[in-house]
Amino acid sequence: MEARNADGSFAGQDAGWTEGDMWAYSFDVIHDIPRLIRERGGNASFVKSLDDHFDGGHNDHTNEPSHHIPYLYALAGAAYKTQERVRQIASSDYNATVNGLSGNEDCGQMSAWYLFSAMGFYPVNPVSGEYVVG
Image 1 (spheres, helix red, strand yellow):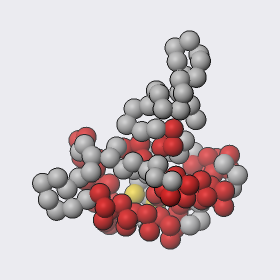
Image 2: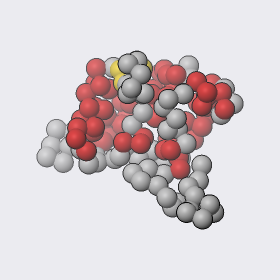
Image 3: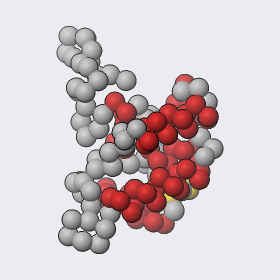
């Protein structure tokens, strides 16, 4: 995935993004995750791309475009990986101090992610009325 300039040319992999990068936005098709999984080669291939995202150091939980990404494992048949990633993010990016959030609260999204995750579910597509168990 790559952003475009006003003249239609490609902007380069590091340009044109807001609060995320090409890695985060390549998983930001929340309105049709089943098709995203199919387009990425099916469950096993999709899980590998999620592993590459996380293991390659590309996940940036400090902003909203990446908050749903660990829950995508569950939608590709690897719920145990959702659980592992969510626990890791919750323990590394949140704590009970004045600086206990890793990013800008943006009207409650950082704390909402934590609360949903602590309860064990998350609205990957916030307008669908459906939740993913994690």
